[in-house]
Image (tube, rainbow, N blue to C red; front, side, top):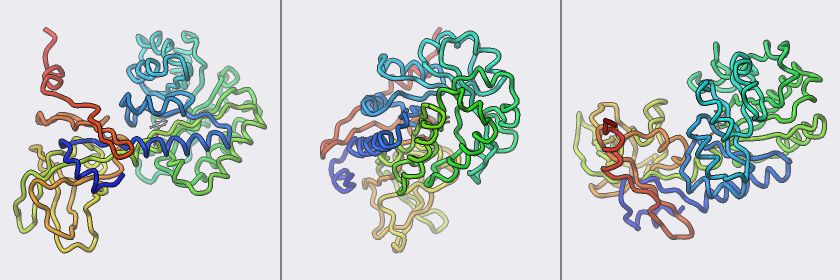
Length: 379
Ligand SMILES: *Cc1c(COP(=O)(O)O)cnc(C)c1O
């Protein structure tokens, strides 16, 4: 998206601007990978379940992947029968199983215990999430194979389990924003080694998300992997990217609403906050800012407008000093931003705009009534 043109629109802020052209380009490149490898493609809706995005994705995918009852219901309503819904979560509740079975086509139980408890009571295609005990993520906060992981069944237990022959599928997800396929290949090889001939009894293998599939230059290792699994074992191989679909296509547009000096540094207060992109605070990283000039002569600490002292985007450098009323744009904010956002302090959620071919359209505006409704007691 051309950021200068975006800013010249003077859209209302704060706003999450989603570029439909870019989302479609991501979907097309994933569809090409699907076509070349023969894998099946699901969109992991937890990254951004905005229905406009689901509608864009629908023609390109074989279904959606979900992690809860609400996600399962939304996915099933949007697909309206034209695609499968795959669930995996540590959080299946007994009172939700009937509804989950209605909305989902595939369930990968998280533990052997969960499997034993629920598998008889569902007519979904039943599998198990496996913890392959292979870590590729240095930061344990998002490492599914960390010590004492809660995610998936320990592969050392699984291969000896009496339940293994009854499973229709396996699910594995053990990477984060991967940009090469080596971890995926090593993971599959380990599962193959441990499961041996049991592998041929499975109908499907879900390889999860956690890869920026369309940013990986050499797709051949993935294509070869899927082809081998399909030819050798007759498996249906699924991938379920989230961030790879929407991550790069989202922009947070904000306005500088105040500026002053504090202990010798310029503070620029924005009409947004880290509550619109909580991962900035959770993981203490700095989001990419379009206006940032690494060698710029001016600097400012971009601050959110809530009462939390640590509600800060960090210090950025600029070619020119920021001015009150100026708009700034954070990039790569499509995934795991708005879905985690809150109205802390009573600050509204961002509007959502859709951009396509030079046209901008407001697709969502949250109002005071939405805030009031959230906090209004039922009785
Ligand atoms: C979060 C998640 C995904 C999507 O991950 P991305 O990093 O957004 O591609 C897919 N599958 C499972 C099980 C997940 O937890």
